[in-house]
Image (cartoon, rainbow, N blue to C red; front, top):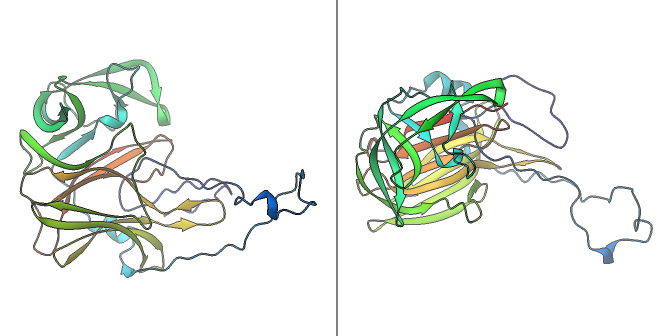
Length: 301
């Protein structure tokens, strides 16, 4: 992992378990202090207010986790493909557009789209076409292509070649709603879901890697099993709080096997970048609750 000299007020991280992501959270400036507690010497002054002593309250629940280099060496490529769509749709654009290098689609291919219509989600087959977005250069000075699809409702994502996914209804317990605040998988996050009479707990805690690296850890628990789903770099100081796995996008039963599946984004390592991960229950081995079957990454700058 290359080391960089990082700005004081903004920390852009370029290492993680999974591809680039969505949101960069910043804590900038001084902690608030009530006017009643300020002495006259501080009133109407341009001098920075005094701070409380900084305390790093990092307390790892897990230890001896593999390093990021070890993960990259042992990780196998998934056979399926996924394209995030909802994140790239804008009201003033007719279609989503993507960096030409990020879009692994042949013109005229049939994909399986997850559409929302009348409050329900369904997988529907759709034909894709791509064309150059003339006169536009995206992040990283890369040309972009339009991605067009059949409009059979609001399209959330596209998949191809993922075992267990087929046309039909999808049970949804949680879905990101653009009209409400996002749900971030931050340190301390904990939420319980129930599917087919079985309770699942999704939570975020902390851990230590074998090389001493601090990480956020996403854990899924159910029926006496506890699985580390993903982890990424943890960082905290006076001005920066980086304690999020990413954003929760969807939870439910996508492969219709009666067990929980997850779809979430990565934390934003690059400006303009995005990454997401789909975990399904159907391909799991006995000791796991979910397995990563596909992801999508779009580079930033």
